[in-house]
Length: 571
Image (cartoon, rainbow, N blue to C red; front, side, top):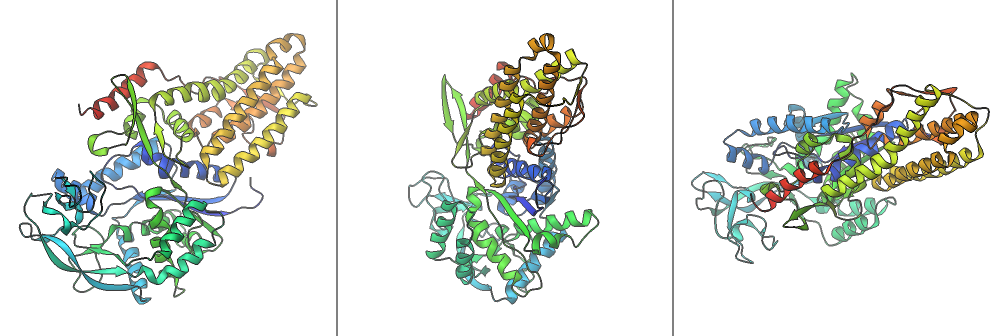
């Protein structure tokens, strides 16, 4: 338990409901947040963890038109698929919502009206591609043509995948509709804009005051603000999305970047409604005592540190809806893939269009959630890009999860059951070596907790492994296989201490491998808590102990690698 309880609202970036989840998604915004939240709950903190699917925008409509479905059919399918996949991976959301609900539409329109009343919305004309054949304006991703920079023939309407250049869609050479292949032309359309420059001073002051933020993030955002912010369009010529409550804008919808983050609010309101306290969401969004933490991928950093806080500032201005600002925005880097090709192992970028990814639902068909969580936690991209490797997954699970943590738990409990009837009563005093081990554990526990509260679960993971190594050293030095014959009481005292260390390991492992630690408590009876907080029980008991994890075999890894190799080679 913590000395003083904090209130936290934790969010993970809303995933687009237009395709399956992969391991890159998990290490960016979901697994780190879930580990952090599980730790806060163990400390007894007041924490709510929300997320939901982002169900509007061009990626959704493109998928729908490509598959001959309605946008609603697409998002309904992927919402259910993602919700199930997250559950299989033990992501413990308090609420998993979606942005296509009536509640979310109401919230989005409320945000718009508040910003308009504050003088932060303006109207302006802009050039956009129009398809005479289809009789509609086309979003950038609906347009293809020849790149004006490198001459690539299949360049997108906003960016060239070949050279990486950004441009306006009307700058493409021989542009055409991606859907019909027909010609397109430039026409003028009218949109609504968020006057972001009006928030520049307040944003800079706010970001400068965040002493706990990572310095590179702070410096980058402040430099960007000083370079000048631009107005951002908040409407699009599209038929799927939240309607714009303005005369003359009936055929337009809110831009997905504007409505998506409001989904955090909508999801929290759904949670409060479900718990029977519909107004309780305000404690988490409008009480200055709450810490609002957004876990995201690094490509969402600018949005969550400028545009979203500006929206919150503008809506809160009249005092009726006094939203708080984010306390922290942990942004993780990217994950690439190691793919074996013709005897060589290559690090390549994931490509969902080429099926070159480790899809989470398929990985869960091959392996349980806990080993996957364990490996991904060991390689979270907290400070730089990382590479997913099935061979490294096998090595980490077999050597660290099983050889270190699992081996210790199994040795202690099987020895207790086999030679001491499964019961170890509290000794009059612990041996000196046990007390030394306890002191080492207290230091490691303090370091683990500090790193976890700094939202660095990968660094905390290293301390978990250190706890396992220290416990194994104590068990080996105690040598209960000898002392059980020569000095049974000493063996009992040492094993009692081993069980106390086991309880601490289980406590600190729970955020990473929750299913296994839950199974452990089915055959281990004793406190699962830090040595720092331990009140030694009258006895530890074990009955029916069995290994918590299974080894990852070469054949399973070979099959998983073969799938990636075929995708890379286009087979």
